[in-house]
Image (cartoon, rainbow over all chains, first blue to last red):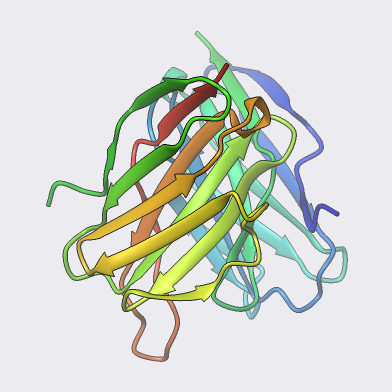
Length: 110
Length: 117
């Protein structure tokens, strides 16, 4: 049973536009959420995180939104750049373990 | 720092053979994690260690899988005997400990792509 779900396996966006990646979770005990980015033949790299006491966290072009009542988080990338093309994993944690989703492949078209 | 180092980067073996994957965590990190990535299940946590002690191995799929951490700078994940369904990318990650307890952000190695024929 997937506790963290990324229902869109892929997403294509035009350069300069906004990319929105979504993630849903089922366990209300999760209190910390993260996004990782992964390029081919490399390991995932940390991108941005948010604690459950917040509903928004921003870092440059990247913003993560958390809706606890809906058990939903999203990652916004504005403006999208070709170098953002990668697989994005969301993860949730309630203990010392991260539970990852299956990933969304983002392609930013030049 | 060199980051998390994994070897080999690619491994091709035949069903029934023993496979050993290796990981060197970032120096000073207290936590080490082994993950498996597949298309269907994404990134799954197999096991993690704190100060070289296995804390949670509930993600290890079967008794064919075992992991050790003999010291702070080395860990192995062994599959014996290997099966075609074990084919996946295996990642090792490490993290510091937070002052409040628990691991900080995890840093991943480049992964080992395992193919079992």
